[in-house]
Length: 365
Image 1 (tube, helix red, strand yellow):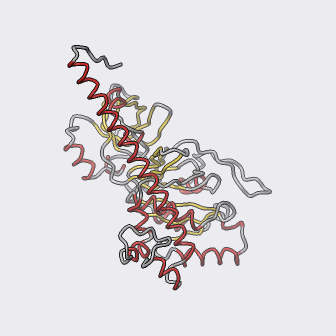
Image 2: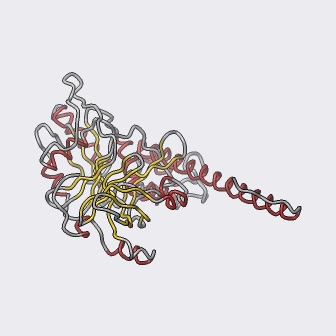
Image 3: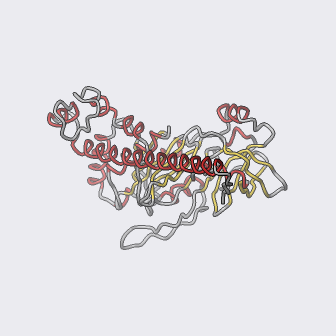
């Protein structure tokens, strides 16, 4: 978290969007701070006056309907400051942008980072390199209103010819997304990476364990602040050491969030992000014969027709279908749960009414 001292709240990314929402929610009587780290049951927040260890109120816990209602790294929060070291979080301001995913095999949603400007999506040439995996991250970031940038790391571990082939297939598949080829051993690409980062803007690093996210951030910081494991000489791989999300401050005034490695990048209700990223396919879908076309077998499907003529890439099409199915399944399960909750609420209401008619008393436990 260390870095240059912030002299103004705007230096932390605070702007008119957050200020107008603070006034709208009648939170003028509180100071504001940004969440820069999340611990078990506590947070570290920062404003122009310093850093504080913070907890949310019991009222906030009671009102929370899901994990999304709790603060996350990058959030702006309204706080009271009882002493020089501690703060109490009374509210989370609305998010301008948010990256979230489904995880744990259940329909649980996890916020990865809030109010991010650019997401650096990192893959290593020697690990889980996959164009489809890149697309998963792109769909999540696009849905959250965040610009994605690809970082292909550890480029020193493959021959130049192989690297050239990988670069070619990436640029052929993703024509409108920036690509940075990086190596923390030779420092190649670090200047290009650093040039993206601007004062007062927030960036996060996403990717699997061991792809070098923390090492890249250490290089940007100019010192080894984040703990990383030594690289195994035989495998060329480092072990994952980041265990929590945390924000760090660069000397140029930019802010970066380090994230634990993610084994799974599950889709949530991110159909808008998928359609935005796969715009060519989603535009073709508007010309399908049936409005509820699944683009898998129906006659008159414009997407399948384009696939047959080679107008769209087969692998890209396959990934699009898989991501859409995941997002639709999540949304369907979420709707079913909402309906069950609604029916249960009706049942409780009826039970209270019957007890009242019978002169009984309903006691909530």
